[in-house]
Length: 355
Image 1 (spheres, helix red, strand yellow):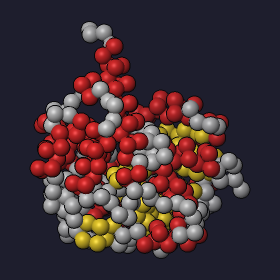
Image 2 (cartoon, rainbow, N blue to C red):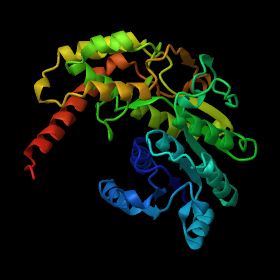
Image 3 (tube, rainbow, N blue to C red):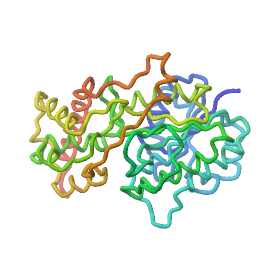
Image 4 (tube, rainbow, N blue to C red):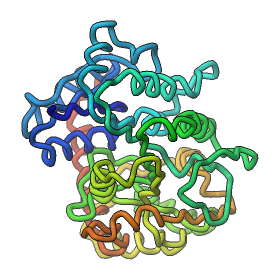
């Protein structure tokens, strides 16, 4: 039977780049991209850019709705055909501020489990989560099931994701589940390119080039480290583990096992910015209040120390060439692509007539 792979969470960076990765590496697989109505046009545009768009089917639905928001026939077809699920929906929600007070945090996780139990050919569920499920917990954190919420959370999004992950892990003994927890995602370590220049790292890069500068960051940032992970490592590791028989019923931290201390990371960005040929005056400078508000969302002003162990990940990647590179080796590439994209975006805005 041919592989049919369901991906939720479009248009997040993991969902988009995972789809592209699977099209290249699974030549006989078909991809089903579950897409909310809001992103329908973006999904159609996205698949036209793929190597073999005929292998991608767009289903309009929402993972948090009953039966994934699909018709009875669409849901039934899924249960009869899918062999692998990459559930990115809950990780994608972490990127959004649009979480309503009455939103049931575990709705999408419950629907995922419901679909999995109905699917007759399913061999694996890959649940994409985040190290943020640990909230304010500090110290050395293992790749184990997280059930303790007593430490509290910095944001509603973190609490939401934690509850959703707990719903999934409660079914790990009876379903073929693999959980991936990721950290701050950045671009490809070999090219610097990214399908989304958002997140904490790029916010720091934007602040450092501006008049707000490094003094603001060095004065206020208290968190011990800011773990960043390149998207190509996340995809390569996730793809290998999703096909590894020993990865079932386990949790993997797809993070840099040796993250730079916060102040070192900031200085690393500053050093590479200083030697780059960038017309900084052409770049939009963030407002001070906006920059601080966004930094607060990433709780970098808190005196937080946590080290995320990667024992499970290292064990199953030992006999491969897949390793998480050190940020220093690709930082300049990330910055070059980010500033090039920022300048192009600014030039496009400047060229539009005022109305």
